[in-house]
Length: 479
Image (cartoon, rainbow, N blue to C red; front, side):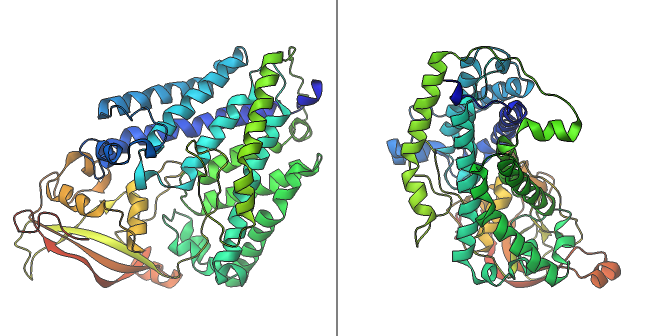
């Protein structure tokens, strides 16, 4: 069965295994830092209540029979430890079953978290990470050739990811079709980074070229991932370069990072040999029959699950970031099917005064989302600031039931919530009143930046929540 071995992809396998493990490590650390405050026993959307309400409909999870913050943290630390071992390459130095078990354990642990994560884990890159971890589990160890069927399954994942994102854009928003989407996107994306303002201020003709290049990369190039080498490798390099451009221009958690890692699976060793003038000759043993059988069964399973995602790619009502099974395998992907033309931010303020006119209101600063107009946007990706992302959706009109509990937590100066915020203007003491106002933000022009030093220009456009206090009759404000 030598034809099932993919000779010449050892570097790609190393990047896939260690890169996906690195993203898992970031995801587990993110859960350690944020899950208890957002979804823990006393969180904004407590996981125990969710599990009690939905039961088996939550999907496979270790927490179905019992949830506690301690058990959640134990799960995360175990997952992080396994990820660290895989990054170091220790399981890969053993027999093929060892990295397989390690990756499947990480996948199962993170699946348990995602399935009870509710809106805070409702992002497409959660399913992407789960699918990637499952597939990479079958790449084997350093003792055997990389399996061809696994590399093809990973290319199929990259194809769905890229082509799905391309088709959802063409179908979803006229600005993608008339090439004007980037007139707005860098300014209105969920979490700009330090370079986003620079990209936004580029000439509009260049923006149109960028959009056209994006369409070519997402709608044409993915088909060539299945072509013979070196064509497939060239297609992969184009996708990697495009994703790197997105990494530089915005904070999209680990979406672009893991896409880059997965696409390296289509880059052959011959590219590295030509680039670095080296010879790559790994010494493999004979692939065990049992491992080949497992890989073939996995490939058949993935092929069986691929029918619905394949239909979705060409459906008139294409689903974006949808899972068709409880295990988050062979999902539908896509991002920014529509582009918001104006940026609105919800600004939360508190006061220790009586809330009447003349009270001094002080602003809570979040870590990633825009707030203080003079503050330069920060780089956080591939780390995922979940509360900041949900604040962006809140400004678009999506609550999800977590915002009112957030205001109550701030009124109580909840220490776990305050750890998720960059600046608490009351130094851990509870404010007397709190309110939420809506502002329209835009990047400052070059002239405005020189004269004021501000990164953002903003003006108030409305009030989301009038002043409330726990001392009033409105214990639970309606957002």
